[in-house]
Amino acid sequence: MQKISSAAFADTKPHYAILDGLRGVAALTVVCFHLFEAFATSHLDQRINHGYLAVDFFFILSGFVIGYAYDDRWKTMTTGEFLKRRFIRLHPMVVLGAVIGAVMFYTQGCSVWDVSKVSVGMLLLSLLLNACMIPATPGFEIRGVGEMYPLNGPSWSLFFEYIGNVLYAFVLRRLPTIALSALVGAAACGLALFAIRGPLGDICVGFALTEENVLGGSLRLLFAFPAGLLLSRIFRPVPVRGAFWIGSAAVVIVSAVPRIGDSEHLWMNGVYDTLCAVVVFPLLVWIGASGKTTDRTTTRICKFLGDISYPLYMVHYPFIYLYYAWVKNENLTFEQSLPGAAALVAGSVVLAYLSLKLYDEPVRRFLTGKLLRRKKPDA
Image 1 (cartoon, rainbow, N blue to C red):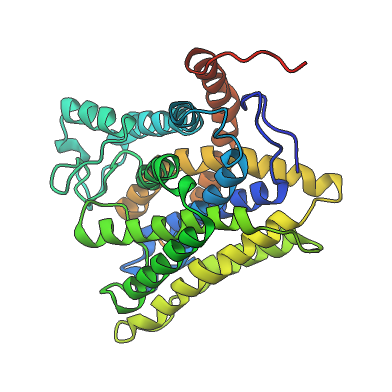
Image 2 (tube, rainbow, N blue to C red):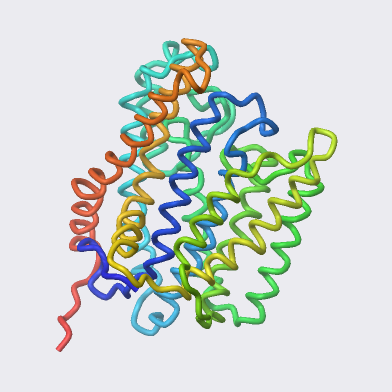
C-alpha cells in the first residue's frame, strides 16, 4: 500500500502501490502504440501491435480498485455520493483533454483529414460534446475518421468507464458472488467469440458509434470491469517477489508482440487477444495486488507512474494527431521522426505531471468541497 494524493477524499483507502505503477506502465505503452499508428496501413502491420489491450487492463484495474474501495461502504454512502465521487475523480481530465484537443485542432491538418474546412462553430460544438462526454455520430464528427471524440480520441474509454461505474452503482454491487461469476464467464465467452469469430480478429474496438465498435467495446467493458470487481471479492494475496518488475515486463511484452496470423487467419490473433484479456491481465492484477514495494526507489517509481497514468492517457493524444500530420505532410519514416517521437513521449509525461499538480488535483479539491457533504472529523 502507499500514501494517497492530497486531492483524494478524506476517507480514501491506501492504494495498492504496485497496481498504480503497472497502470502507469500501461499508459506509456498506449502512447507508444499511438505513435506507430502514423506508420501503419492496418492492424496487421501496426508496431507495438497490441497496445490497445491496455484498455482491457485499465478496465480490470478499475473494477478491482472500485470493489476494494467501495464495496464495504454502502451502509453509509448513497448512490448519488458514489457517482459524484467518480465524476470528481474522472471528469476534470476529460474536460482538459478536450480543451487541449480544441486548441491544437487547426495545427493538425494533413491528407487524411482537412481541418481547414471545419468552422469555428463546429469546433466549439465538438468541444462541448467531448467535454460533456456526448459521443459524435459517424458522419457528424469533425475529423472525419469516425471517432466518438475527435478532439481527444481516448475519451471513448472514459465513456465506457462511466457506464461501468453506473452499472456498479445500480446493479453489479448488488450481485452475489456466484451471479457475478456467471456474468464474468458469459462475458468472457462473448468477448472470445467476437475476437476469434468476428471480422477483425482483434478487440481494438470501442472508439466509434458503429455496430462492431459498440458491440466490441461493450463486451470489453462487460468482461473486464466485472472481472476486476470479482477479483476484489475473492482476492487473497500470495507471496510474490519483484511483482512490479514482473508485471511491468509482462505489460510491455504483451503490448509489443507482433500481429499473430495474417489476413487469412484472423482468428489466431483473436485467440491471443482473448488469452491476454481473460487470463493474463487478471493474473497480473492478482500478482500486483499481492506484491509490495520493498525499497525506496521502486516505491517512488510506482507513486510517480500511478500519479501520471490517468493524466498521461488523457492529454497525449492531441499531440499524436499533430505528430501524425507532421509525418504525413513531410512523408517521414519512423527513423526520421524519432527525435519528434521522443520529444512527444517526454513532453507528454511532463504535461501529465503539470496537469495533475496545477489543474487536476486543485479542481478535484474544489469539487469535493462543493459537491460532497461535509463529514465530521474522526475522533
